[in-house]
Length: 162
Image (cartoon, rainbow, N blue to C red; front, side, top):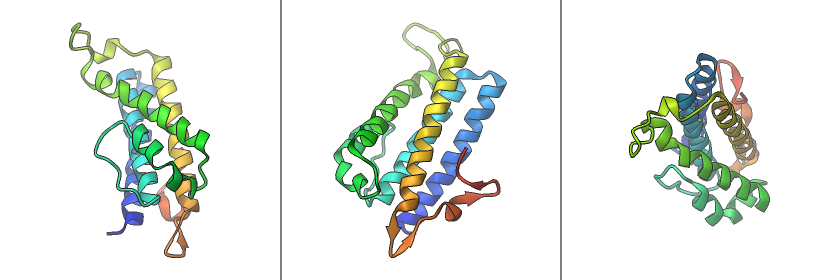
């Protein structure tokens, strides 16, 4: 399996996570929407790193990996400001991941009481932006002379734009 195949698979998973987050918002499950939004962002960023020829780290906050590989990401058309913005978003969503899953264990507050609708909508919108930009950059990347096109990263609903 190639990095291109791996990236495509991660984008497919990210799309599913975005769909789950969107459904969680509709259902009023704010913490779950935050958690699945983070998952979508993480998967999209790992696909982006693979597209840049970088083996993504096995961690949730990919901000450091993005900053460390800024030169490679520039080759995909991302500017320094975009890399920094993606890194900050990754860090912010990763920070909420554990709380959205387990709640505030120290103070015995369940995740369902930590998040509100605005938090869920903000996380979903951030994940959508990350996913869209990562897919766009990866689609422009040429591996072996063939671009990773949006059409090659599509599911039954078309290209991975949500």
